[in-house]
Amino acid sequence: MKLAALTALVMVAFAANSVLNRAAVGAGQIGALDFALVRAVAGAALLVLLIRLRHGSLPLLQPRRMLGGLMLTTYLIGFSLAYLAMDAGLGALILFGGVQVTMFAGALALGERPPARRWIGAALALCGLAWLVWPGGAVSLPIWAVGSMGFAALGWGIYSLIGRGSSDPLGDTGAAFVWATVAGFVALLVQSGGSPVNDATWAGLALAATSGAVTSGLGYALWYEVLPRIGASVAGLVQLSVPVIAALGGVIFLAEAPSLRMLGAGALVLGGIAWGLWPQRTSGSSAS
Image 1 (cartoon, helix red, strand yellow):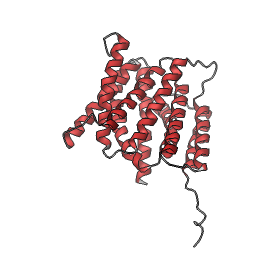
Image 2: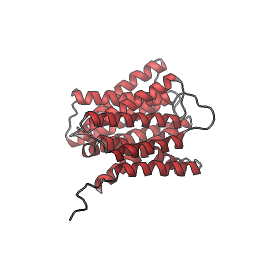
Image 3: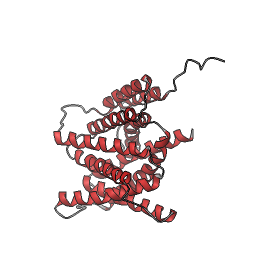
Image 4: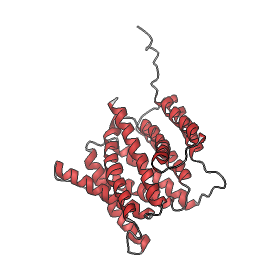
């Protein structure tokens, strides 16, 4: 029960990132890449502080930590760039669909053999997600934006797979955020012509910092705490709950209107996840 509660808390943190991003970037309070950079800086600052209070050192040049930083950077930048030209709903579908594929492929590569029930549950949840986020009317999918979100999905999937071997979740997450901060500064300087964080309001900066320090920094560290204790396919499956929780957060905090489609699609997503996680009875389970 404790593991389930921690996993649920992580999913709420991930969904809160989406709500904070929409409140800041969607409302024009801050630019997309500016949000990603402030998010990385705030996450790195809090995690480094906690690590210094704990044991005072943070080795950055370990191969796993450098790869984790690269994958986190790929996710943050790809995610931010894609949403410059892509509907948020379709972006979520590509992102979480891509993460699902990456995590299940990683599970197979690591020797896991997900049961048929989990594959079926994942398919049902993905259908529910498509129903939830598919926009009405014409659909615009610029190739570069799709590619950016695809790279974001790959980056986050591999970042999560790396976390399955973490023995120091706080240190590994802190190092990844430090590397992401360095790469984010470079990317933003190139994009903005040498002037980072333009036209950001104090409200936008505060939302980005909250996303970075709390729901990203602490949330990702908790994710690395949980990952070694669950399978890769389970980790991929439970993340499909994030768009549903984010939609609920939009209703509560952003005054977005609920709909019957949201309720039906959310039920299908959560039902698919529950079906995929439901323990299978073995042939001997009924014997006494």
